[in-house]
Length: 203
Length: 386
Image 1 (cartoon, each protein chain N blue to C red):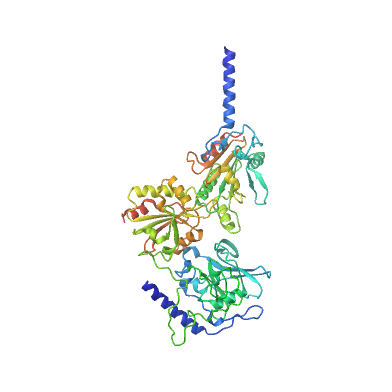
Image 2: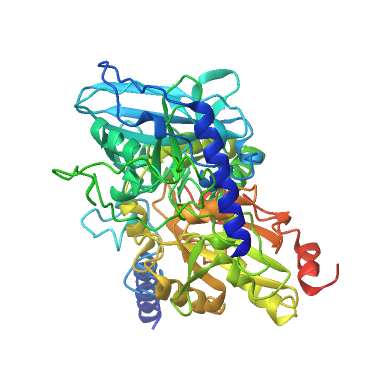
């Protein structure tokens, strides 16, 4: 009897773990697009998956032109002791994104998290015409953040999923591989709240 | 209409006087050749320039900013970048001395930018006019000089602005003029693609510029007429800007959106802008509480497809899904949206931006670049509380 109960418990636990690893939330009305998940220690998770199921694999571009998957950036950050990384997707003229960038900056500074949390601001409209605005954005609202690019917005659209993209849009990953996509329309949590949570559950 | 005619007569008279005073001057190109019909060349009147310059003072946005033109000669490998002095009113000084060479094609772009006060070579912020003006050749400029006043090379080339060759003082130069008129099909000189028509003969001196000697005062044809204010609404030119209503899909003047109210709450929004939808809720709630007693609402949404609205129905769907009636939405181009704000001395520094403006063009509250509504204070104006 005890063995049977133990067996059922283990089975339930395994099912629960399995469910957690593949839990899907509604991302812009499409249940087939994963908006959050657990990495169970693997920062990039299953690299054979499509980015709709594993948005950690979505690439963004450094100013040098090199492309890196978001999870690989988190890996790099982890190797130097980092716990979580915020990828904030934005248009240069998005005022809400500026406010959000300032909140993230204050959150990191006020909680002495600069070694643990990295803030990347990913611009979808970096052109010669917007360069000065972007420079002003970074220096004013994200002085400890780092600029990245998503030149045609394709990565942001993949992250957002089907439908009409809205900014602010953010992706937060921790060194356990747990991640969460934060859309503006999701008012249940803030980027800083999610980050706090993911720092807590980091390794 | 009568007032408009009076204005045109006045403008015409001014042109004539200016024309007579300037006399004949040669316009020389870098290769030493001269253009034709220099004597007829005059700058158009001030209210034909960019709308944002109409007030003579570009307002806060222009504070510390400069206007300059970049001329790129792709065919001959020459680049000219002449900075304009930040003098005001800009409209009268928007001239850029240039040397043009025969056989070269010129791409001309107008920029508005802010320079770093400590380093004049460092550009902090730039805005180039939408739709690249394209290219224009010396020959086409010559033709424009010949036709100035009767037709427009810029219109014929389908450019967003007119190009006028000026001879203010001793300098030949280029002035940019807002093209608000329906392009005139050129009868001579230039076909709609901008190429010279073979065998065509330039028009003689235009009646606008050179009147018959025995009749010095003539009424010019309505080239670039100043748009008449819509009803009693005067938004310093913005009232005549064309917008497309999201509900009906019909084009109308922005001024018509006032609907007889004293004030209008104007929002600059974009489809990708999540926080812009906050305004939808604010307006919807405000209307429910009687804030539409004194105010009308105009949510302008950028068109263009991609991350922007495809068309009026696209905006209509978005507005309805955010519980706001689409009759308050208006599809606009980026340049029109900018003009709405700059005409009134404001600017769009990001999305959303907003203004509460009175029907006489007075900006009651300027929320460009922020979410700070002024909340109750502003809405009390709409409700009739003050």
